[in-house]
Each structure stands twice: as structure tokens, then as C-alpha cells.
Length: 305
Image: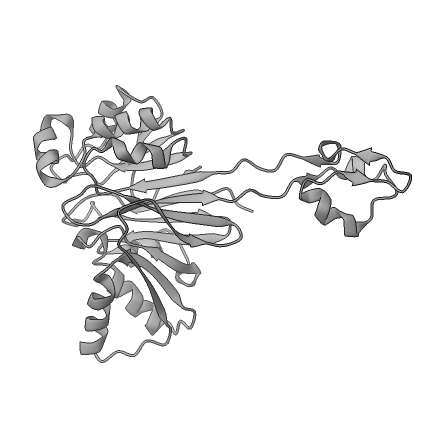
């Protein structure tokens, strides 16, 4: 299975331009393609990134400011025009369902597929999705309106069989493999106990990704994102504009780096840049004064966990 990856579709705030695209990204993890936010122009960016539309089932919308969801109705319409039949599940604050329903009502569109809406309203960390491979949590953020970040965590995998050692023990049959993968010792016919660690290798490391945009500087999120492998944290402004960040419910690159350092994350990705700063490397330079492993995210670039 491919290593988990994050493809940035857009990483700027507010007004789209020829070069700047509002927030949207695709997280590939354990065979799933998760769309996180869907700013204007997302479907065009998906095509440029060569991401197949029919692989997107789960869509996560952080909050109801337009630069985070104005591309969604267009994308849902394209799904319909392409003859999609698979359901889509949208995790978003209360209100988005009404917006979508009104649009399709007055455009007289009856979709060929179903949309399942999971409405978010909790002010605490909450598990919002779970399957056999992944669990996803909403992270309460501090913005001008109700907003969530998202934490994606792999579930532990089974141990890997050490076939070279297993072949030495003739009592072990194929039907025993499941128990051995689950970490159980093996008992031979003559009563000997073969420790599991002799028959298996450790499973792959559990990986995690946290998305935090938009938010004021808030130490309260640290406990929720501790030790994640990759953190995307908004950095709308540089520290010269810290007062503007406070007034608008955003963060600076410097503040994002403080969060990453205190949470002891493996890597920090910056994003949601204000268009008043055309040189995104300035964000990276500012953050590196605090946290060493940081990168300014760029559209259509893929980052691996």
C-alpha cells in the first residue's frame, strides 16, 4: 500500500487569482482519498493533480467561510454530470446541508447519487469517522465563526509474518497465520511455546495528520495534535501583522511554529497565506526561527508522512 501523502490543491486565503488558490487538499491514507476543504476552483486543481473524482467519498469542510467551500457545489454538480452513483459523505458545520439543498432545489437538479451529511457542532475533540483502518477526529478551533480542524490517525496494523522462521516449524499451518499476525504466541503439538516476536516483524509505524485552518493562536489544540507526523497549520500573516491576525481570527507563521514546537510534531506545513505576501518563503523563514522542520506548502505539491 502506498505511503500516506498530502497533495495541496490550494493554500491561500480569500480571493483566488491566476496563481493563488484557496484552501483545498487531498489526503491519501490506507487506500482512501479524503478531500479537506473545497475552495473555489478545487475541481480544476484536482484535474491538474490527476486525482480521480470517483475515489473521493469523504469530504471534510472546516467552516463556512467561502474560501473553504465555494468550490463544493461545482464539484458535486460535476460528480452528477459524470454519472456518479456512489454516495458522498460530507462532514461539515451545521448550515452547509441547507446551502447545498437550496442550490439544487432552485437549479432543479436531482442528483444521481446520495449525499450523507454529518453535521458538526461539538466544541470538544470528537471522533467523527471510523473504519477498520482509520479514525478521524474534529479539532475545535478558535475563529470568527464555528470552525474545526481534523485529525486523521491510522489504526494499528497486524504484525508481519517472518516466513523464514515460520517454515522451520512444521506444526504451523496457513490457518494459524491470522492468530500469529494478531500477536499471539504459537503452541506446537509437543507443547512448546514459540514467542510471537520470533515469528513476526513489527507492523509499520502508525502515522497521523492534523489539519488546523482557520484559527487564532491557541495553545488548547496542542493536546489534540501531540506528536503527529505532519501538521498543517494556517499562517495567514507574518508577525509584523500580528494585530491583524488577532482581529481576524488567524495566526502568524511565528505562532504556527510555536504550536508545532510545543506539540512536538514531526513536520509543519504552513498555508492559508494572505495575498498581501507574494513571497511564501518569508513565512517559512519566519517559522524556522522557532521550529526547524517546516515548509511553506505550495499548490500541486505532494508531501509524504
